[in-house]
Image (cartoon, rainbow, N blue to C red; front, side):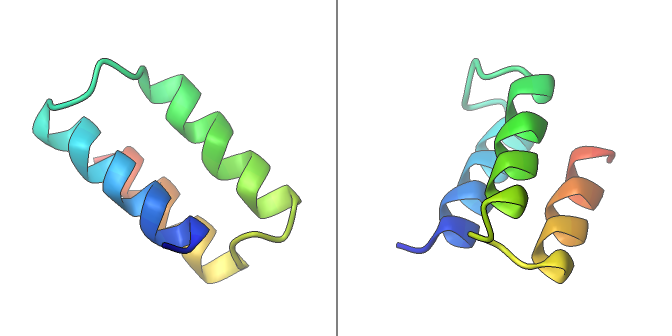
Length: 53
């Protein structure tokens, strides 16, 4: 599974209440993946947008 799909799954689990991971930690993981070129800018914007819902 690629990094985007892994992060998307984590975000979905967070939104559905299936993970004890805190929002700030998920956002940090998204930021790190973007900084390390594991996801692109569009994917970053999409994931961060979901986290603000």
